[in-house]
Image 1 (cartoon, rainbow, N blue to C red):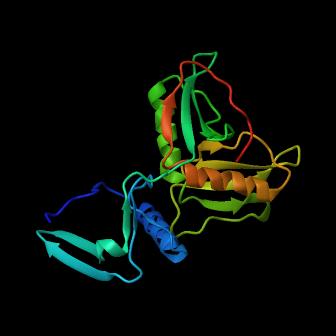
Image 2 (image 1 turned 180 degrees about the vertical axis):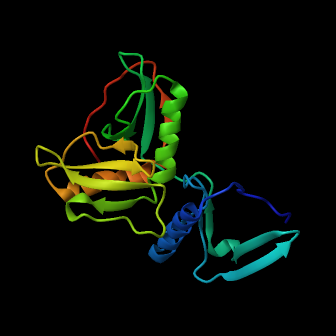
Length: 225
């Protein structure tokens, strides 16, 4: 049977982004779950219980190649090229002031995140969505009430901050390394646990969520999943 390329992607990644990607694979392996091949998780592979592993380090014309290859019998594993990567969708819309905004809406109709601000240019709003998709999965979670600092290793270019607002409710926001808040939950929670559930829903659903452009501002439910 001729060789078939099921999925291939190539691009530059920071050390943190690499750590995030490999950490997702390691967690899936430890839990016995299918491994995400692409960042969105739309292509997954479920390897055999035991697989052949080849690690190769090559140098050629000033370029170093570091390759990890896992091989197993097709009958003992599974490949899914149409995995259910997300239970949510990004809605991109213009508000009453003709500002472009986005919100992440769960399949149950609840808004689980939004950008918190309007953009004059639709492209900037899309860039905001892409930043959340790229950074949310691997972002560390820090509790501001404990003066926590994010670990130096791993993570992404953003962190989830858990905090209490003036009404003594728990909230979360996703802050980029440049200081900008790129997403928040949009509401307060009575308990820290509920706030963590909200941000974890964003962690799992944002990467593979489709982006849908709406004709206008169509309100959705303002609760978290």
